[in-house]
Image (cartoon, rainbow, N blue to C red; front, top):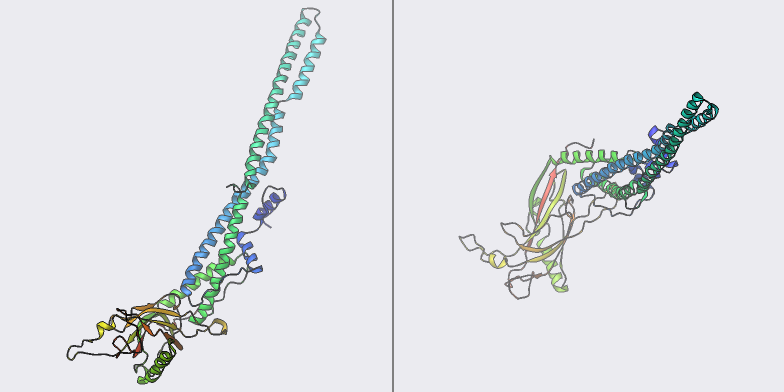
Length: 441
């Protein structure tokens, strides 16, 4: 045990210092979290970048809490040691000042002079002179002793006032709400550190799982160690940040439009054969339910080592009526007034550690417009899509009713002019692809 630790222990035993300063605040937080982990939400592993950003904010706060806690410990130990030293030295100083008064010596000198005056007597000029001199010195010593008594009282009062001041100042260190109550302030920091460190651990676990799912990389988290865990977690976060940034250098992003019923892709086949599409429309019309479609993009998105979603959009297609020689669709204006609503369910995603596959929340697009050169109006690019693997079975629900310009009830089965039903859906994908650049190190 270091001399500093011994000093703190002695100050605690003498009641000068709160026992909270015997342990490091981050070490106590780690022990508490491992003994009784709090109930926190599970964060989505696919949101690596968002989790990493949050993790850094949490770690920065934890480091700031620890720094402030250590500064409070320095202030608390110094205040306690100063008070302890004052109690030891103040009594010594008081005794030393009282000794400087030399009251016993003055008392002896006074007795001696009075005895000498009596011995000399008053018989004869010479004895009488010595008698008078000794008697005068005795009376002078009597006055000195009276002054010394008053000085003793002054010294005692001064040290009493000084002690009262020091005691009152020391009491501030245990007064609730006082800025000098370093132990209370440290306790608040401990509570904040526990909360943020607990969330940081959960975020780090989500990042660890995300690295396995997205990058096929194992990034072992620091082992539990109450002394070094926070620092090791910071180093781990730095390594993860460097790895993700290095991987981003090899990433490309592009947009892809995937028709559902139009023959397209490998073998010029349709993802949803047109007969199946019409059957889904008929079923929805008869049962007055949303149009249900399923399709699989695994055979379309081939040739990439790592492919992930960044955004999904949707547009619809119906009949085309081109004016000869102009290239103008005479129905384009009427179609531009139509808006559909669709709910898209992305493929089931792989879980870390070989767990069961799971689905991200569905995407709701309420502003699906006609397919055109301007791109889709209905696009989702939020967290629900980040790093989702698009390869696999998709499911889509299409609301039959169409929002239109006028008051008529219009649906996808007939279209706005009763002869232009829904014929196709165009799925717009923004994809991020990359080749493996190396690995975790």
